[in-house]
Length: 375
Image (cartoon, rainbow, N blue to C red; front, side, top):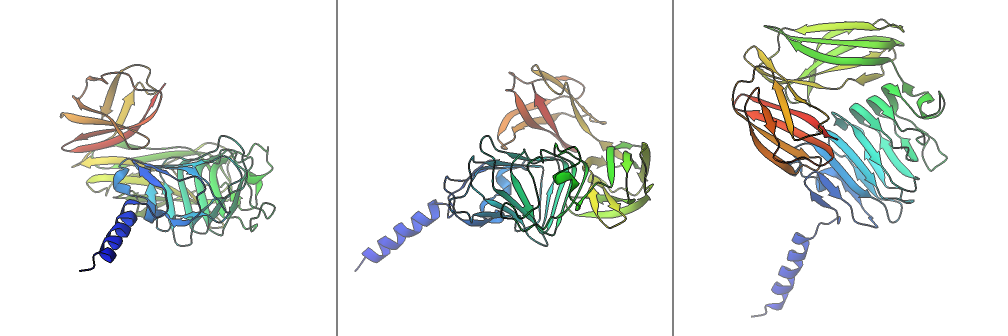
C-alpha cells in the first residue's frame, strides 16, 4: 500500500490548520498584524467577537508592504471602542467601510502613530458612527468616499484631508460632529464643505420615574438644524424611532429638551438621539443604557473615578443583592473577579496599574458596565 501521498496530504492539512492564512493573530480584543503585511482581508475573517467580551477592539501594528493592503469592515458591527495602532513609516494601509455597512463605535475611535506620520487611508462609502470621540491622532490621513461619518466630537484632524494631493480621490464623506478641531482656526479639514456641524450637544442623560424613562439633553449651538429623532433599542444595534422633537433651526443660546418614554419595555434598553439637519445630514449622540426590572431601572457608577487607591464604591439603582464584579483591561483580559455587597466599599486586593479598565457588575437581576480610570 502506498502511504506517502496520504502522509504528505496530512502534513499539508496540518500546516493549513495551524497557520493563520493572513498572518495576523488575535489575543483577547487585540489583533496584531505581522510586519510587511501584504493582503486584502475582511474583518469577519480575522476577528472573533467571542474572544473580546468587552467589545474594545484594537488593531495593532497596521502596516503595508507593497501599497495595496486593506482591512475591510465587510459587515455591520457595533463595538464599544476601536483603537487603530499604525506602524511608523510610509505604509499606506487602507481601512474600508463599504456601501451598505455601518460601523458603530459606542464610545471612542482612536488612531495612534508614534513616529513618521504619512500616507494612511480611510475610505467610507457606508456609515461610520462614533458615539463619543473620533481622534485622528494628527496622522497624515486621506479620507475618501461617499458615505457618512458622525461623532460626538472630532479631534486631532490637523493632518487629515479629503484631497487628491496624496493619492486620494478628492471625494469626501458627509461628516457631522458636535465639535471639530483640526488646529486650523477655521481652516483645513473642519472647514471642508462636507463637514456639517448642525448642533453642539452639551449632554444627553436619563432619569427614572415610577413608569417612564425620562430623557433630557441640551444644545449650546444649532445651525440649519431641523429636529431630533429619539431612538430606542433592545440590543444596542437595531434602533427604532419613538419620537421626534423639533429643533430651533438657528440658535447660539443654551436650549434644553426632554422626552418621557412611557412605553419602555422591561430588560436592558438603549437610547440615542439622531440630530437631523435641514439638508438631511445627521449625527448621533452617545448611547445611554438602562436595565429594567419591572418598573425599576438600574444604572452603575463607580467612585472615586479616576481611582488612586485600592478601594471603590459602586452605586447601582435599587441593587439589593450580592453581585460579582469583573474588571477587564482594554484587551478583554480578566484582571479581577470579586464579590460585591451593595452599599459597601470594595477592596480590590491590590492596586491596579495606571490605565483604563472595563468594570462589570452582575447579579441575578442586573448587569451593568462602566469605564474605570486608574491614575
